[in-house]
Image (cartoon, rainbow, N blue to C red):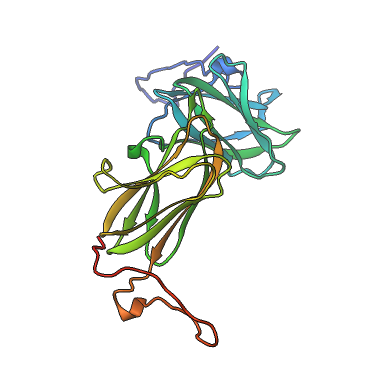
Amino acid sequence: YLRVSNVGQAQTSYRLNLESIPDDNTIDGANDLGKLSNKKLTEKEKIGFKEGSKQDKYDYYSFTLPEDTEVSMTLDKLEKNANLHLFDEDNKTVLERSTRKGKKAENITEYLDAGTYYLRVSNVGQAQTPYRLNLESIPDDNTIDGANDLGKLSNKKLTEKEKIGFKEGSKQDKYDYYSFTLPEDTEVSMTLDKLEKNANLHLFDEDNKTVLERSTRKGKKAENITEYLDAGTYYLRVSNVGQAQTPYRLNLESIPDDNTIDGANDLGKLSNKKLTEKEKIGFKEG
């Protein structure tokens, strides 16, 4: 029963609303976080505290992917131990879990097909803790539009370690794209090494269509492209050969401009040995 009463001689109109709140302690009452596309979804809550006569041991969430996407799911801001589980569309099959000890952040990163998925936040033992749940889509580096941005290449070396040819969801990861920017005209060495199987390297122009150079050596030999490039943005594509699956390391390094005395190639110390350098002059660079 509910009773509405005035206070003193007060006279007022009012509206009375009653609404049931889904029980997010069960997967059927999961909080719907909505559609995950380019935006980040964030939820702040707490787990392990009393709700009525029961302890709140589980919080369930659902989210929807409009297309195949790699998703990072993070549970952080913990004061006590809590775990994170990812369930498939059937809301029964556990696809992945993160169960680190103590109050360390939990993370699940998975390539998922389009559809609806469920997350479960659970406390460990009698732990009571606030938490923050973050969901974020990761750009698809299988296309040049989703290229991983390596940033600006100046005097520092840019390095990326990844793998190619493995399954991502229902598809094989055949291409990884990267972009980088040159603030000025520069000679750049681009190396793909640490290969266990065959992979190739392609360099694309600013229009992200024109192939400027490629390196397609056989087997697991390192690939290298060295080019003098105008200032601007460029793209690299790492691709596997056939069904090859391999880790790799991608290194980008600017080469000092030996057209000026400040960028002179250092031949080292001359003592009793002969110093020899073979090069060419008069050709176009960029």
